Image 1 (cartoon, one colour):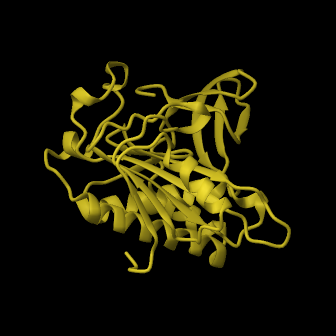
Image 2: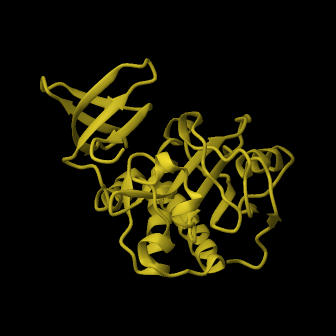
Length: 252
């Protein structure tokens, strides 16, 4: 991790993403990180709560100023997820797969997630993106809500050992920044080619609840060249998923 990287370490906060957005609005530079030991209001996609028990996981948010067109900013979630998966695998040796658009999986169970949020877009300036990461590192099964225990895991639960959080933090930050830079310099195709190698849903049964609350059940065809998930329903219709709640039928 670069020595000059500003790191704000907090014992507790409601949300590292909220704090990072405030810092960015006050001129926080790219590469600034907010790390907390626990969050009282950790957030996932679609308003879901991210459980952040103290001392058990990595909960942090990274400020980026990517040189990307605003229309392509949603693909940063995929790039960040790929970077995080590669970093966790490098440190732990565990094979990490990805569930569109933002989940990190170990053997089909969620071990981490990404939440990207954009700040106000100024005229003639690079956009501000906050990349929030939650990773269950040494979280025991008892620290997970009962309703999540069949579809969530931690590095400790999965591997039976404790991995160093600081090493994981440094590796994940570097890998996310590397993938974000790659996205801006090489475009979407190269990143998507690697993302598809870790796609946990390809060919699997999925349910999708759209933002209009429509339920679609079908087979994942993977992501298209724009980064949208494609689902083929029982009638053969192919749906392009831009947002909404996507779950694997086997474990959600």
